Length: 115
Length: 114
Image (tube, rainbow over all chains, first blue to last red; front, side):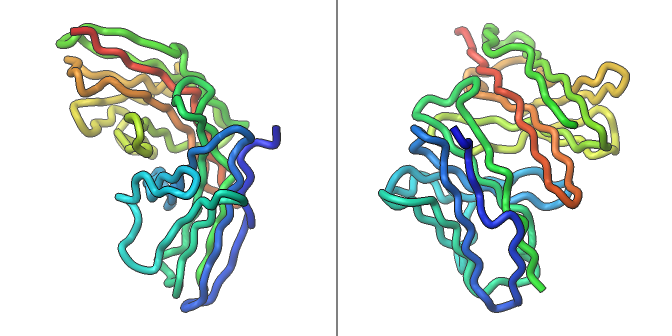
């Protein structure tokens, strides 16, 4: 079991470009969460998805950000027209239906740098 | 290397009594430490964080935690439990350097008895 796979590990974009971050959950996990982390700020929840459904997007900025988790393939966090303030580490986590001990697994993150 | 150990997978307390959720960590660097809470069908919510300032950290909903370097502990406490505190709690070590590291504990399920 390869765990939660995120790619790319590092991503550099110029202001105004689009950034696409990918997350493949653990085998058997159908729930995906995206978080953003700024230095010393801790994780900030963005969105919670199940296959083909957005369950909770209360943490997503209203503009430029979108997320999907299609029936086949990885979950994608998409940031359009990136700005310097989007520079951060973005973490994805997956879980099976019941959250509990050993049930919540994070990927290694994608470090987005906007230049 | 960094690691986090949450000593109890389940904790049950009666409503109105104190809560103690234990966390021990190890880190080669000066870490930031966090406690998060997760309710069903919700993402993680930050309760509090320690980032090398005051060792006693106050968070939301009446929770607090004390960073004890000598004991490598960061236990979460609350004087009086409420039914709405029933959830999963995660202790986290974070090291933000060239290779971002975020290490989650395995979680503690808090049960509140009426």
